[in-house]
Length: 233
Image 1: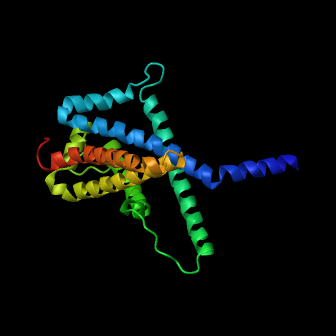
Image 2 (image 1 turned 45 degrees about the vertical axis):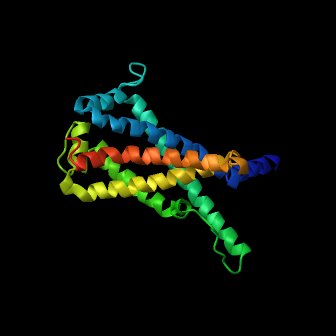
Image 3 (image 1 turned 90 degrees about the vertical axis):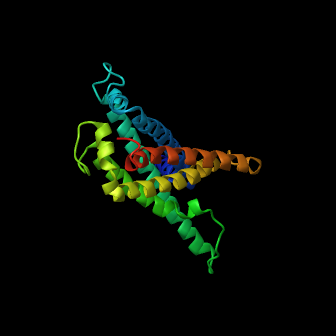
């Protein structure tokens, strides 16, 4: 009986709102670090094909010979996928709970003040999820190949964002902007979950969140737009 009670308490704790918010914050931090690292790698396209392809190849050799070739990449991909799934699951459960709480507490729904990024988090998340799938099929596994397939990461990027494929660039731009809004609100919410978001610090925290979101957004937009407008060939 005691064991059953203990198990139930643990299950409740893991599924509590606090636990879910903490899981969102932790998984979100991993995703933010990944975005910054990925953005850095993308910007190497301005150094030319040799530098960009060399960087892409070097990722496969991290940890070698302790790990097999591409071993680190697969470990990282598993961690990244787990973070994404945890993030989505936590967000979905928290959203459902928030809706239920509002329905129980209010007979007449009241409009609440919210930032635009907070308002678009849900649909922005859907757009980002679709973009991630397309991005992997396009630039990672080379299944979708506007402009032609290539073994060169640099050529795949350049081929895929040619002016005649403006719709690919447009989709990329919209998705990256959605990432920016999501990132700004996510950093703010994550810091609030960790108890850092005190009233006296809110303006500074908001400035940091906006700055990181802008840097990541601009950093991800520069390569495809540079290709589309002929600055990178």
